[in-house]
Length: 576
Image (cartoon, rainbow, N blue to C red; front, side):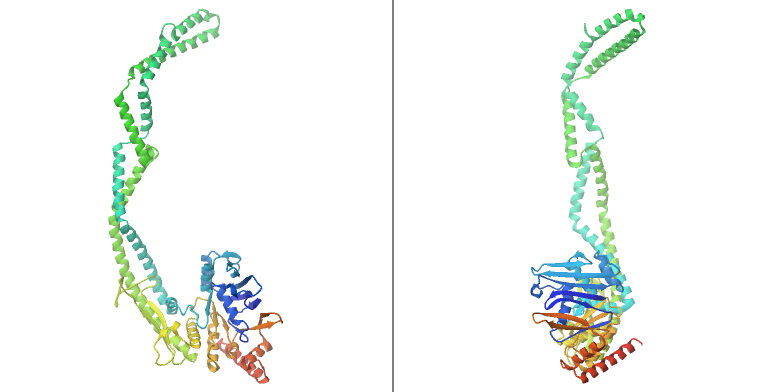
C-alpha cells in the first residue's frame, strides 16, 4: 500500500506531504484546489512524461517521492527482487526529480534507478484510472491476464502446463532453425576439417621430431667446417709434439720422483687419467670425422621437412604437440557434424510430438477460458447493474487468428503464442440497441468509470495491483448512482487500497480516510495544503460538498446523517 506521498514544486504545490491509510481513501476539495495534481504526481512518479513547464515558478527542480509498504504484496516484492533492489522492512521508497533542463533523475530506496525500472514498478504497484486514460483495463493486451485470473485454479493449471510445453517447443525449434540455417556452413566445415585432418595425417608427425631435424640440419650445413676443426683438434692431441707427447713427458718426469712423496704419486695418477681421457677424445673425434659427409640430398630432405612443419605450425599450432592436439579436436568435431543429420531427424520428430500435445492442451485451455468468460461477463454485468447501468451489456470476446503454420484446433489451424491460442477483448454496450464495442471506445466518462469499477469489483481476490487510483470516477453521476459507486469503491477497498478524487458527498462519506485539498493564498502566492479530516472537520467538508461554499445548519445536519448512514453501511458490509 501507499503510505505517504511527498510533492515539491509541482504546479501550484510548493511542498505537501500526503499521508494515506489502508482501505478506501478519498481526496476532496473545491474545483481547482489541486486534487488532480496529486494524481498527476503519481503518474509522473511511475514513468509518465515530465514537462518542465509544470515546475513551480521560481524553482529549478520538482520532486515526487512515495513510500510503499509491500508487506502484503508478494507479487510486487518479486518484481523488486528481479530489479535487484533491496527492501528495508518491506518498505519501498520511489523518488523522481525533474529539472528545468528536462533532465530526470530516479531513485529506488535511495539508489539510482532508470525510468524503465520505475515504469516496471509502477505497473506492478499502481493502477491509475482517469476519465479517458488508457490504463490496464483499456488495453486489450491485458484482458487475457484478467480473464485468466478470474478463471481460477483450473485455468492456472492448464496455462502452466501449456507454457511449459510451449517453452520446450521453442527450444526444439530454435535448435532446428540453427541446424537448418547452418546446413551449408556445416558442409563447408566438414570439407575443411576433412582436408585439415588429411594434411596432418599425411605429415606423419612425431613429437620431438622438429628438434632432431634442426640439429641434423646444423650438422649437414656445417659438415666441412666441422671436419676441418676436428682434424686440427686430433692433430693437436696426437701429432708430433702434441698434447699426448707432452703428457707422456710429464708422466715420465713425475714417475721418477713419485716414490719420494705420496702427494706426487696422487698427481701422477691424476695425470695418467687425463692422458687416458685425451686419448679417448682423440679416438672418438677420429671416429666421428669418418662419419661426416656433406649430403646435399639429405639436406634438401631435412629443409623440406622443416618447411612442412613450419607451414603446419602456422595453421594448426605453435609446435607438433599442439598440432596433434588440434587433430584430436578435429576428430571430435567431425563426429559431431557427421551425426547432426540424425540429430536433425530426431528434433523434427520431437517438434511434431510437442506440437500435437501443445494443440491438445491449448484446446483444453481455450475451453476453460470460454467457460470463465461467460461467468466473468455475468459477474461484471451484475456489478454494472448495482452501479445503475441496468441495461448495459458486457461480453468477454475470445477469438482465434487463422495461421497455416499454427496449431490444429477444431475450428482450423490458428496462431499461437506463449499464452495460448486465444485473443481476448472486453466489449460493452452501455445503452439498449447499441452494438458491443471495445472499452476504449466508450464515449461517456461516467460510464467508463463505472465500467472500470465493475471490472475491478469482479476481480477483487485475484487482482495483482495493490493500489487502485480513481480520478473523476463520479463524472456525470449523482444521487443513488453516486451512492452505488461509493459502495462499490468501498467493496473493492476490502482487497486493495483505493485512492479516489471525488466531488460527491455520497462517495466521500463512505471513505475510511478522508483528505481535504485546499488552495491557500498568502497574498503573494498560492500553495496547496492537504489535511486529514476527522470529526467535525469532516462534517464541515461533507456539508460544503452538499451545499457549496455556503454551509448551512441544514447541510450540516444532512452531512451528519450521511456520515452516520455510511458508517452503519460500512460496519454491516464488514460483518460488524
